[in-house]
Length: 51
View 1 (cartoon, one colour):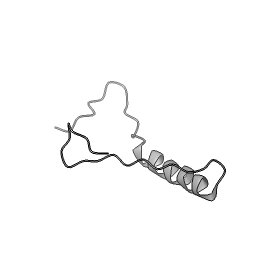
View 2 (spheres, one colour):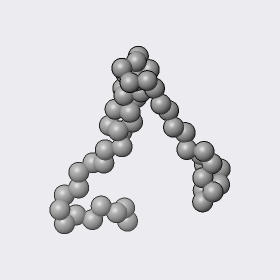
View 3 (cartoon, helix red, strand yellow):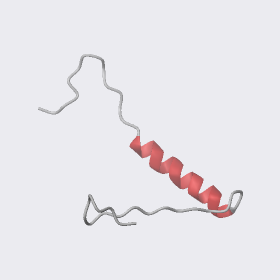
View 4 (cartoon, one colour):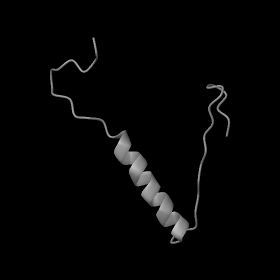
């Protein structure tokens, strides 16, 4: 799916039958992606922006 507000970018969606090996593989893939997206904790009151 093309994204009109972001030329050159596209959204890809994958789907699998529940309970299938493909569904298990997509679940594993999504877990890997989610674990990479977790941000590092920031101490309260610290300046998280680079200067």
